[in-house]
Image (cartoon, rainbow, N blue to C red; front, top):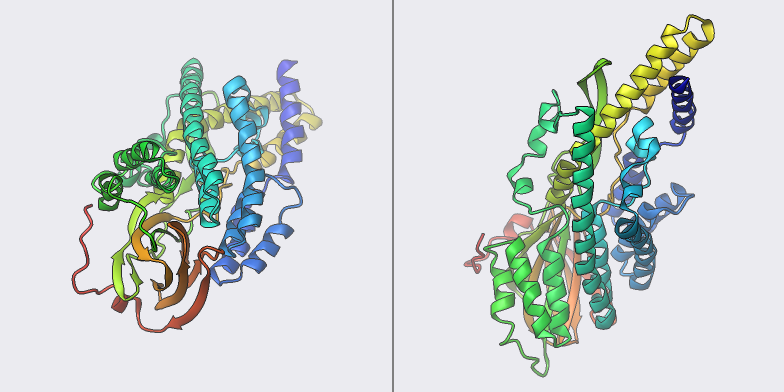
Length: 471
């Protein structure tokens, strides 16, 4: 009787899920295409048309698209709504973690039925990008609030992940599930065993978040708080000259009349998409079963290696790879994904066998429907914050206040901008998407598109003797 009720529940949930599971990568592609073409308003229109329900992903994507337009208040407003949803997750992670670790729909139907709470690196980057928004608009006090939140968020994630991994291990042991992603025949294991992925301590801490925190503290004159931020950035991305300089020159950096410390945050490309791949998995009591798992293949986006500022070349130092962080997150999550997939396969297989054993037409039809629905709903969860950059790099310069010319290389040339520097500490966001460059505009850093230069990008990145950066 219990199995009969289970079979009925699977059928009801599966049939309802068939029409409700989002094909998120297909949805987001239209917005991405418009953003890459320099049409953020059209990208926002596509986003609105695809989201009648305003969920976490909607606000994450909206904030990023509005940031491209330098709509700081709109971008910050959208991201604060996303942040409120992340804070709900944090409250649950601290007070009721077991409720987050097991959801009936994901065990019976598909991981797509799970509430999307954002991946750990997305949670951290959200507070970091909020800090950058505030700082770019000259609101250093609220930038400080966000960098402090970043530290607290990392601690909450670390504690929750420790509990979640222990629970998954115990559950897998009790059910006899020993398969790892390396045992999945046909799964591209090299995407998760990449050296860039294995080099990461975890999926959510990154040097950019901690460097930005240090820069904010430095701008506010809190050098005792800035120093630990620079040290943490160095720990996460060792042997990087610009990070080491941030720490070693901290005490010597004093505000000079008419001069500014300017931090260019150069974000390039797009975070890699999650795709669903189907591989056979041997399941006890069920046999060889076709199952779907997420896979992330590293992108090949263009990233500038230098900027040209007032005629001199400055090296661009990549200090955070969203590409690698997203794959590290998947690597760490795979044991839980395999566990849930195995439980689904066993539950569905046993339910279908029970229906087949009942010798009547109704059970035969129900078994057929269950088999078909199982095939349709066996899809990996492809949801992810798709408008995040693939790489985040920085350039730092001490500049006299006034107007300056910046040239940013693209795939087919370079774009020139005039920027106004008028604050002792200033952040200038730069986003490169192939041939498109978005450069942040604020009252403190009014940026005017000057011209598109047609010389090749190769010509731009051939300075005589650039300053070497340690790798």
